[in-house]
Image 1 (cartoon, one colour):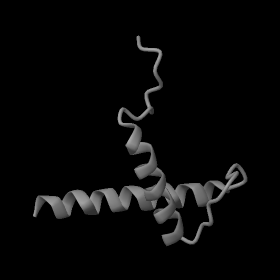
Image 2 (tube, one colour; image 1 turned 45 degrees about the vertical axis):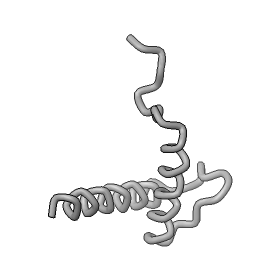
Image 3 (spheres, one colour; image 1 turned 30 degrees about the vertical axis):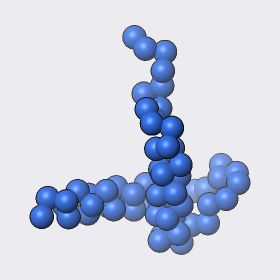
Image 4 (cartoon, helix red, strand yellow; image 1 turned 180 degrees about the vertical axis):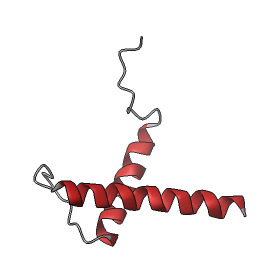
Length: 65
């Protein structure tokens, strides 16, 4: 078994891209992310994750056309 975390990104540039993607999704659902985000509610965190998934599905579907 690897000692690497299963959620680690292989490409170092991917971390920056994912952070930009997360910030964009947060802005779209009206959640302000900056600095420490440990005080987000479950609803806020879920809405960000849900928006990210929605955008990924849309991008995949648009790529299939």
